[in-house]
Structure formats: C-alpha cells, structure tokens
Amino acid sequence: MDVTVIAGGVGAARLLRGVQDIIPADQLTAIVNVADDCEIHGLWISPDLDTVTYTCAEAIDTDRGWGLGDESWQAMATLRRYTDSGVRSDLSWFNLGDRDLGTHLYRTSRRNEGAPLSVITQEITLAWGIEFAVIPATDDPIATKLMSSGNQLDFQEYFVRDQHSVAVESVEFVGAAAARPAPGVIDAINRAGVIVIAPSNPVVSIGPILAIPGIREALRERRSHVVAISGIIGGAALKGPADRLLAELGHRSTAAGVAELYADIAATMIIDEADRGLAAEITELGMTPIVTDTIMVDRSAAARLGTVCLSSSDHAR
Amino acid sequence: MDVTVIAGGVGAARLLRGVQDIIPADQLTAIVNVADDCEIHGLWISPDLDTVTYTCAEAIDTDRGWGLGDESWQAMATLRRYTDSGVRSDLSWFNLGDRDLGTHLYRTSRRNEGAPLSVITQEITLAWGIEFAVIPATDDPIATKLMSSGNQLDFQEYFVRDQHSVAVESVEFVGAAAARPAPGVIDAINRAGVIVIAPSNPVVSIGPILAIPGIREALRERRSHVVAISGIIGGAALKGPADRLLAELGHRSTAAGVAELYADIAATMIIDEADRGLAAEITELGMTPIVTDTIMVDRSAAARLGTVCLSSSDHAR
Image (cartoon, rainbow over the protein chains, first blue to last red):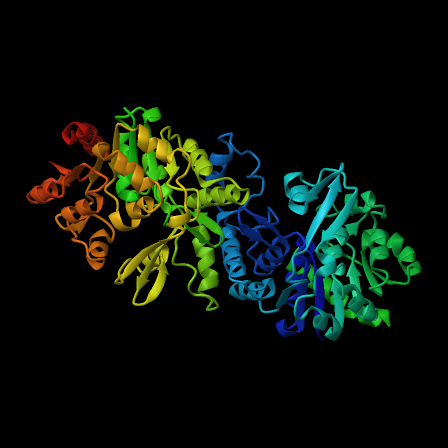
C-alpha cells in the first residue's frame, strides 16, 4: 500500500525516520513544505527539506534539531569578523554550519542552472541514501510572511532571528495562489492507501502546502484515507510556536483546535494519550479519533506511530 | 609622498605586504584587478582582492598561495557527496575553504543588497585591520574570457579547472569598454608621487585594469612617475602562466617583453639581476631600467623592493 506523508520540518522528519522502516521505499512519498525557504547570503536554503533529508539519513544534529551533526562553524566565524566590525550587524543571525553549507552551495548552483527544486531534491536525497520519494510541495516560489506589530516579517526573521517570541496578527503565503503542485504531488495523494498529515505546525508548515491550489482539493477527495496527527499535546507544542500561533490566530491551541483545521480533509485524527479527554470533541467534528502515544522518543517509536497511521484507514470506514 | 600600486593577485599582494611597512597607510592605495571575479554556487568571489587582503593581513595560506590559513574543507566535502553521486560531476573543481566562505557570504550579501564592490572591499579590508586603501579597479562587471582551441573559457575555468595548461589564442575583457574606474582610482593615480605596476601577470592581471577607459590614459599622463616591476625573471614567471600567455599571444616572454607592454605608461622598469643583460633593450624602449633583486622571499625583501620603487622617480627624471 502506498503511503504519502504531508510534511513540515522536525515533527514530520521524526515520523518519516520511523515510517521508512515499515514501508518499502517505492511505496513511500513525502510532500514537504517549502514556504520557509529563503535566500540568505546568495544561497538558497530549504530548511524543511533538509531537516527531512538529514533526519532520515541519521545525519541531523539531534541536540540542535537542525543541520548536520559533527558540524563546524568556521564560515560563520569569518562572517562575524565582518558583521562585528560595526559596518553590518544584522547578517549573522542565520547560522549555517560548514558541512551544511555544502548542501546550500549545491542547491544554489543547480537552481542557478535552472533545475527545478523537485529535481535538485531528488539528487540531494539520493546522495544521502534516501530511497523514498521526497517532493517539495511546489517548484514555484512561495513564502510565508507574518504580520507582527504591523511589520511584515519573513518566516526566518520570525522563526530564527526573533526566536518566534513576537506576537503574530496574521499569516500569508505569498505566491501560493499562483503556485502549482510539484510533479508527482497530486498523484502521490491520489494513489496512496493512507495519507498522513504529519504532526507539524498546522499554521506555518502544513498550512502553506494546503494553500497551493489543487492540494487541499485532492486531499478532500481522499478524505477517508487521510489521517492527521496532532502536534499539539496537552495544549502545547513539543517544539516551536504552533500553540502560540494557533491562539494568536483565533484557533484553540489544543489537539481539537488542530483537528478543526483538518476536519474537511482528514477522516481520522490521531491524538496523544494526554488528550484522551478531547476524543469526543473530535468525534463531533466528524472525525474518528485515535488515541495513542504520539511522542516519538526514538526511531522505533516513530515506526510504531506509523503503524497506527496505517491501520487508520480501517477506522475511517 | 602618496604611492599607488596597480595590482593583480599573488605578486602584487607580496609587494603590498612589504610596502605597507614603509608607507603610511593614508598615503598608500592599491588598485586591484577584478576581471577574475566570478559567481560560483551563487557566491561572488573576488580572488585578487582576497589575495591582497589575506596576504597583507598575514592570514593567507602561504603553502597554497590563496585562501586563508588554518583552513578546513567541510563544505567542499558535503558538496562532493552530491557531485560524486553521479548526477553532477563538474561543480567541485573550484575549492572554497570553510573560513574563506565567510568572506564570500558577506560579499554576496552586501552585493545583493546593492552595495558597490568598492564599498564592500573597504568593509572587508577594515575587518582584517588593513588601513591602506584597497580599491577594485572598477565597480562594474568585467570578465576575462580566453579562447582556447576555439572554445571560450571563463578565467577560472582556464586558471583553476584547466590549471592553465591549455593553449590560449586570444584574451578578451568582456565589459571593460563600458566599465568606469571605481571611485578614487583616477585620483589615486593623479596624486601619487610614485605609481607602481606590481609584478603581476601583465596579460590577465594588469591588462584588464588598463583596459578600463581612463586608467591607461591617466597613467600615460603620469608616465614619469610610473615604475613597473617585471614578473618575468629569466624568461619565466615565478608562478602562474604569464610566460606562456605572453608567448602564445605573440609577445616576448622576457622582462623586455613585459616592458614593451608598459612602455607608453611607465618611464621606469625594474628587472631582476638575472635579467641584467636586458637593460639595454629596455633603454631602447625609452624606459629607464633598474636592475635589482625582485624575488620577494619575505616581507622585508618586499619592503626593500618597495624602497627601490620609491627611489625610481629620481631615476626617471
């Protein structure tokens, strides 16, 4: 049975790391958010794609949660020599490790040659020995912008520079309306026996994927095969600003609040044991709740959660 | 007395390293070739500017002759993971050290913000503690292209990828005719008591500077104050392809051949003791030959050569 995972960064990467152990590579596809992508110092960075790749290749830095392990920071040390000299002080908040830089150099080279991101991503994942399909949601430019105190912030300004500590009034996915799903995206949704919406940030990780015309519609058509996993547990995000963003944008920052955002596209909602009390609310939304342990402490825990997802299509019918 | 040095990469950098010890910083200006500049992996590289900066800051890798000392190569190792995987094999011939990458990230960021190269260069040299003025010959794009066996090569393809081992039929400086001298260039020539043409490659390092409209003319006006140093000693270049290029392009690959290229703009020609026999030829070209030890084995040898340059204006009158 083909399995397709709608993916953001960390939460999705941890799920995929385990799911790749229980699904043959040629039956597994990840459709990954690219609205966090940015150009910094002339280099094209795709944070979520790299987090998925590095995590599934067991190459990610597990302490930091992003970038490569065994990393060094020589390039940043030189960059700081310039930015610390007083001429420019606002260039060095986005850290790029030396090993990681090789990925961005490659992506940028290939992009400047005209290769689509989906092709470049295939090349990069292959080089890391990843055999399942990792597809950017779109090859077209799409960028999350957040309004905070009346100022428009790029996603990385909000997320990295400001450490997501500022209040957000609204979120916009610039370019989304004109973006087309990358080759293979709609097909992966249509042919999958189970489509999993990973426990990623529903607003800024899954949100931009669903904003690309055709993707939400395709999921809605396959609703009985779609299972979403809440990344909110006990009212809080394990990592990142999902809980705060949900509240600021007028949603409930609970697993039920997440379920509400997916009710039209997912028949099944997986929530954590800690949120067992919310199961009735989820049923009221017209979704089948599955209560299980959703914290992926290791690779096998992620595989177990994947197995629960696979069984979900039974629940949904 | 103000001193201005017309500079390429290695030879000029070695000279400037010594000259900075004998000339107050506010009286010294280097006008540096930028026709070797290139965009690689999205990053803007200025090889000659960096060689001058790193050398004068005693930060260059002396064994390699380019880039920074104490260098690591993590980014290149990752890049090779991609290029070795068979998809692309032609991206990794241009090596960029991790420490060095910080310079290119900064230059690229500032350039993408619209800062002219002359301003960026000032910022970079300042951060390395260099107090004399380092000015790119122009802020406009200019690029050396070489024809070899009927194929047009970018300078770095010729110099780095092909290790300057291919025959060259012609050299062109694309963009030179439309380029304007960077702010301060013409003034530095006009006000200097001595203008030194460094012992850089006369064809591809000094040649592109002289091809920018206004610069050769300004030097011609100041001819009696201009002293050129031959980078060809005993018919051979100390480093690089100057001797071979001179011969391939129909010049003599001797100090006299170099003198001939500068006869209209330099009244004085410094040649090595090894070329004492060529002094008469240089006199015949209407130049005053100075014979001295031109091999800059260390910083003090470079300072001594600088002192000879300073005394040259006496010889010229």
